[in-house]
Length: 371
Image 1 (cartoon, rainbow, N blue to C red):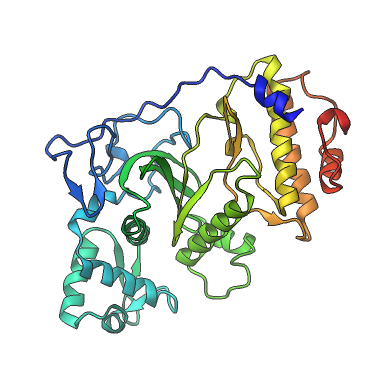
Image 2: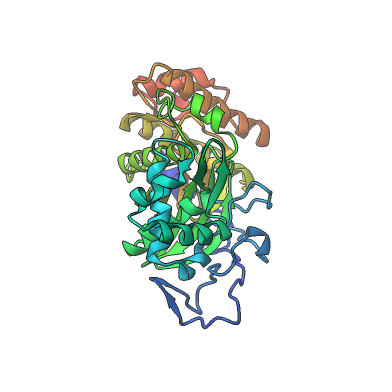
């Protein structure tokens, strides 16, 4: 049944997306910057440090574009050519010190960085000028990483591993992540986790991977979210239709770039509605069999293409033996069924989320008609 729906599914989708032309004409597009090449055939955002400088946005891709807001973190890829190894020693030293305190004492930085006090002063000045660290004088002179500094540490590590060769357009910004197109041997997506950037207290309280840790920074929260999502993707792929995980460092995940359109922006024909819904339910069933419940399912974390559906955003998922797994599964199903009933009235069978959840949990789900 699912394969029949997959075969019948056809959407009038553009084969690609309209990417912005963000290459600064004053730069030689054949130049290579520390492993990040700028090629004429790829629309590079390497020199655009702010989202607000972007002219044009992608219309298709892993995430749809989001309007610029004041809380967005700058695109720091363009800073890589400017920074030297000692600048990264400084950033890494602040990162190490933040394991113990949100604000790292200036006097401890030579120990954490391996730099002389004079070199620390010079590197701090460069980092402050570029907005990579923040300074605060409390009982002592302290420094903390900004998300931009953390982004650079992760990006540099991924470049050095040859995971990323080219850095491209922003694909979208969500409440808890920023996503860019990148390339290596094929188009990929780079996702920076932003948990804790604007709502740290709420995330710290709600997420299992931070709730028992007393000293938790936004940096720790974002890194744990990325580690958790990457681990889950590795478990689910390829048995469940999720983005293929490629690499992970700190709060950043590199994954295969998804094709298609976000479900919320898709207009299905009457003949496609049940097919797409059945495909989604089959993926949730497969994920449950693999040991996970998504726990945040909605029309905003599903992509639909000619090949089927892809479910993304898994950091908040819970194992099936979690005490609230049944409740989360039923809520996921209620969200999906509710969306389809609102957008496509009269086309969805009269089944309850509770009954579908029971069928999935009992490993007896085959289709809506069998519930």
